[in-house]
Image 1 (cartoon, rainbow, N blue to C red):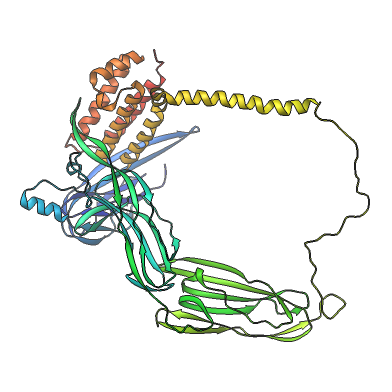
Image 2 (cartoon, helix red, strand yellow):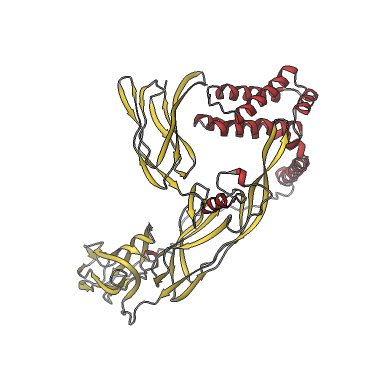
Amino acid sequence: MLGASFSVNAPRQVIQGNKFNITYVLENASGSGFKAPDVKGCKFLYGPSVSQSMSSYNINGKVSQSSSESYTMTYKAEAAGTYSVGAATIIVDGKHLTTKPFQIQVLPPDKSAQANNQQHQSQSVQVYDIDTQTSDKSVNKNDVFVRIILSKSQAYEQEGLSCTIKLYTKYNIQQFMPTLQPSFNGFISQELPITSSINRIENYNGENYMVADLKQCILFPQQSGKLTITSGNYDLTVIQYETVRSLFGMIRRPVEKQIKVKSNSASINILPLPEPRPADFCGAVGNFTASASLVNNNLKTNESGAVRLVIKGTGNVKNIKTPTVTFPTQFDVYDPQVDVKANPSGNSLTGSMTIDYAFVPQYVGKFNIEPITFSVFNLATKKYEQIKVGGYAVNVAKGSGTSGREVSQNNDILFVKKGDLSLMSGNYIIVNSVWYLIAYLLPLVAFVLVLFFYRKLIKQRANVALMKTKKANKVANRRLKTARSLMAKNKRDEFYEELLRAILGYLSDKLIIPVSELNRDNIKSELEKYGADNASTESVIATLDQCEFARYSSMNDDSDMATVYNEACELINKIENVKKK
């Protein structure tokens, strides 16, 4: 048995007026004295509803068991706002276990829905309400759209600002394809990693939408004046629902609809940097500090040294020009080596720029390396500030060599090898050899084999029915895995819906019958034609009936979910092992 744990499953966002559940899960232990915290802004309806489950696994002969107790509390969201929910407690073997506190956001209801209710008009499209997402409605510009959002309406040249491109939708999205991306002419763009899945709800202009971040970046304007980010074009497939009659009665069936969406364009006014600009201005705009050091203090002729300049701060770190360092004329100086490390920080970047100025002294003596000076534009003070660091007195001793001034070796040209080179001479004709013929025949044979199998694969893929039949079990297993995850989270309605979809989808692919045409009679007859026995056929019909009944039943007994899930897995395995007549 694994160790005990106590956790909470709760929605991050709910809409005012809607009911929702908070489920506390105790795993691998039996508890008592469960206490749930108060949830501000929400009305407690009933609970806890307690359910238990146990499972065992046999992996490579090693048996392990796990159990869980779920305590489900039901609430109704009443007041919009963001609320902190404290920890729940439970006693296990005399010890108190607690969950982690969390936050829940209650969003206000859609203004359009309230207006429709008051005027008794047809209901507008609502998030998470498929009854309003019917296929007879056209998808208008307020239901699905893309926004380009800038963090500022005005900025200086080289001042960082964030740009986010968001998708707002009241429908589930089946497919999303950008056909024309927005352009960022006049900017240097630093793209940020994002998760583009629809994972939250936002209230925009009084309406609730599911939101996904399509692109997020930090922009650094390179010129003054009005700069515009052009709009983008997108092809989307949204999911609507139609009511159809099935062997289980009237059901909602998803319908795909293709639409085209064009985003807005976004403009920003870019201010020029103040004039006159200092002669040593390095292009740095933001808040920066600097430090310098001499890498090698014990210098000799023909040995390299370096001055290291480190610029740190927040701003356009990656766009700073390399400041100039004045070295004595007796030094050979090389191109600076630059290393920039920067991470996003708000509307800009925070990091460091390390510059190594390498040099090689050619004469013995005492020399001075002048201090490094450069200017930056501070956004906080709106002024140029000069930074001065470094300045070194360097003593150069005589290095290896016989003269006072040594010339460094050029390692690009190597010496010519001398002595016995072990050269070989002789003639050997390979055209008449066996290996020469094999070298030609092997590619030819390989080409013929590849062509044969490729033509066979194309022929199989052209047979849509055969491909569906072959992939039926794989598709069903993927859906069963999703159903098992929903069962573990105690999401009863979603579990039965996904399980029913897995069974019907499997039968549709295996028997080559569209899902919309499946009914009791043709399921029985086609399974008998396929070779299934009467017991398997009856088991399929019974499991389908049980899933459909559970979906529309008002009972909340979740103890049978594991049983139904196991029966579904067994009947799919039985049919999969049947030899087709």
